[in-house]
Length: 215
Ligand SMILES: Cc1cc2nc3c(=O)[nH]c(=O)nc-3n(C[C@H](O)[C@H](O)[C@H](O)COP(=O)(O)OP(=O)(O)OC[C@H]3O[C@@H](n4cnc5c(N)ncnc54)[C@H](O)[C@@H]3O)c2cc1C
Image 1 (cartoon, rainbow, N blue to C red):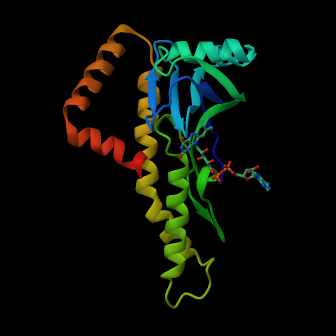
Image 2 (spheres, rainbow, N blue to C red):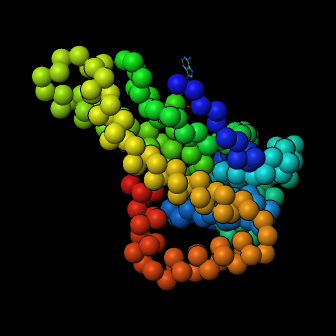
């Protein structure tokens, strides 16, 4: 089994910050004009964890800033919605890649988690996909009936079939959004805004998008 990951041309810069005002359990995300995506994820008290999926050049620039400059850059990028920031944990950088494998299973082998699929972190779904894999594999093994060998291909194929649709669906959504918001150009921007405005006015669409992340 062989597959080459497709780079998104973005590097996720992650760090924890202390902020002037508590995030009160509220996550914020900005799709920026420079093609980057900035997420502030709430931590207890007056702290947030951030993921700035930045075009490679911007990520290099962010990583080269001293802590004070980085904190003020991140606070300003979110319009100081939580006041001023101070760095709590130094930043780390992770190049982002999309990975789809031709198969989840092989001879006496079942892949799960990031070994089985790579998604853009914009929807915060990587861990959930991995948990779904583990749950499905455990269920297939628990329900195997007369098949004594847990590595039997009939069981592994059953696992692969069970995970095919959820993984494909999540990859389609996250990859589609990453491409849509990574694209430049006036018409793309109009299309994006129309799509988001429509989704905002349709509660069932909003719920369908938010539900997997809340789970
Ligand atoms: C910037 C960023 C932000 C993210 N944010 C979110 C989020 O908000 N919500 C969410 O659900 N997901 C998020 N994700 C995705 C999430 O981090 C991953 O989906 C998850 O960590 C995958 O877990 P895993 O156990 O499959 O793989 P990993 O976390 O990669 O764990 C694999 C482990 O195996 C070890 N290992 C590798 N090779 C070997 C070897 N040969 N021998 C022994 N050990 C080995 C590695 O060192 C590692 O510790 C984010 C990812 C990134 C990059």
